Image (cartoon, rainbow, N blue to C red; front, side, top):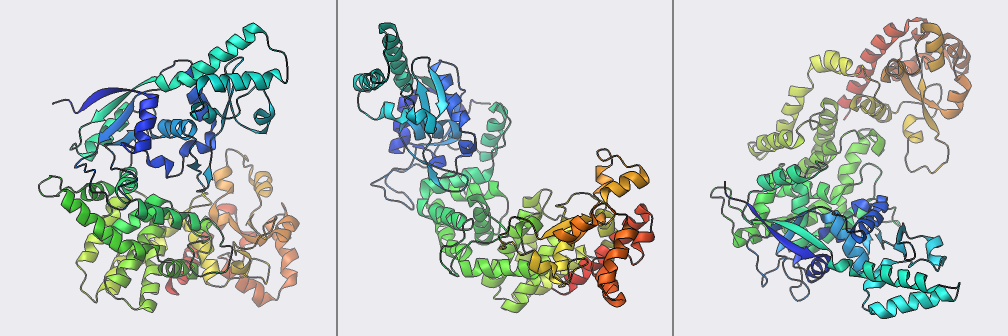
Length: 588
């Protein structure tokens, strides 16, 4: 096979200049910087370069059909279409560019922040900049000043002069300081080698190359490819998606209905991109979408700039729909109406995103009436969450769903989805499969979340309380102590003393989801480690016989639970919990 790449030697200074003029695309300046939570990596990177250590290869992909005169989405006077897309090395180049060009980066919370690395010239020590290094005259508090254009001699002289005002400096120290600062400034001459991949190579091959040469084996996602292209060809669209994601994380300062903020999901740009391409192209596999957006004809394999422009036009047409906060909030209300009131009850982000795509398809493509759409999407979300429909090979699974939807008649959206739901939530599922799946200790399992959501949906009170689970489960309540706590129906220490369980080895048995339910934290403290028969005798005095019986039923607890052996209790309660989930589902 012919070689698919060539090597090109750069200096850091040349790379920084090429990024600045746009010849090399660096989208991480415009997306959350992964290293921001570990700024020490940036410090170590500069330290390694300063000492002349190797920092690895870069991997570039030459941009197919590059045209400096046609640029989709942003002002061609300000920036040209890049010649290269960075496939591997984005974090290293982002760190270098942010510091050497004094550019802010986006934090994982989408806040613009500067990266500050300090340097002590006397012993060539690098530190993450903080208040202490800012005050210490021994440090250059921010490396960015070294490449500001002030001039090497002026930078060195000014530092030494300032230090002399604080202490005496020997000739030898002055020589060392001067030499070390000059060596640091000169890292812009540090050599780096880039492997440049041919432009028309298939993206699957590029991804395989990335995985093989990357020492940490980090998988290159197709979403990363597409977000890179958005930064290159459609910056306005990328910014709109990014702003939507930023707003979803921040409570609006003023009361407004036009915000994406919510307590269920904090989408990232690649999440909303999946929604956009799912609605636009009815595709779930990112590798196919990437090919389409690059302008590849799926039949001939050839690239076409005209086709690329056409595909971007389709995305631009649908972007307002997916980012419309009326659509977004109306969809989220469906999940809340099903009892899923907080993100800790969401066990599958994919189930949320794919349900949103179906919601938009039902509304836009099938003109489904709102009340029907709300009901079917609510049922679809619960079905897909409970069955783990999108937990394994989610793209493949959802693309199959999209292909089935293509075959629906114009008025067959509701009946078509209901048929799929019925194929999955059979009587055997409710009576056998779900009961078996509930033999788990995973507090965030889909089954546990579905049960807690069911308590919300059915308006159940907290166990041994007249307050509703749904009211105390409100995530908007800002209190230091949780009003609601999960309680072991058979307390942990009781199981250890009664059955000889080991608190570590038998943790999974003790923490079975069938042994947990909600209590107000005051009751949880009061019950403590009492045996079931003792604490039940105490709390039942607060309620009438019928009230306590109804309360136990609502929490799927056998009436005589305190008389049962632990294993028998777990078996009985799993069946009852499945029944509660089914009851809530049927009310959607």
